[in-house]
Length: 117
Length: 117
DNA sequence: AATAATACTGTATGACATACATTATTATGG
DNA sequence: CCATAATAATGTATGTCATACAGTATTATT
Image (tube, rainbow over all chains, first blue to last red; front, side, top):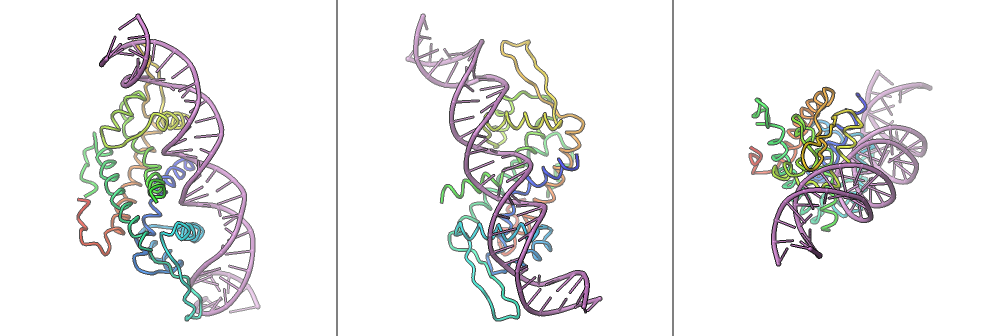
């Protein structure tokens, strides 16, 4: 049961991770700090989940990366590409619309309909 | 590009389909009418997506089904089980919390922050 | 000195939406 | 009356991606 609930929760947040990460890369950030800032925003994400995602986003040309070796530790900074910004804005709109629709569905037959506001 | 955007949109709505379907099965419904009512609520879902999902939900004991053969066409009605209702309420809460967090993220550095209200 | 934190790379697995194929009956339009 | 669409459903293979696991390495902290 607990496994099923966890599995369903994981599916719920699939896809939205991409949106969350893209939203944070409007300004350059490096991998480890992204984990921290997302965590601070309530979105727990492991390094083992984030780095493959960053790799994939770069492959899809949604972000680009560059190394900063001026500090004692080399850091790989990522930032949205122009294409990535386009895609991000489209996905943002899509997610907002979908969420409104789903919220309406969830609210049906429910008394606490303003819970989301 | 259009393929990538579509692929990302599909990922966005993964998982939420389960939530949408569970929300509609608080009262009994049959497959085909579910497609229609979800469509009416703005959630397009093909039969080829819905029936396997219903099959899976039944296997996971979140819903139960029964045949109604009194009409000219036999119909398989689905309804949430007690377990399914529990899971549904948990997922609903999870989704609402996640959505608020993501919305906050998306709103950062954005002027139109009340778009969601 | 040992452990934790900070940083990253690479890869296999499991879950699920989707697409495709199929069956079958009833309803509708020409 | 025939062809097509709509109404209903079953079954299965594929592609995608989050996750888990394994690994490397240096710096910071206890």
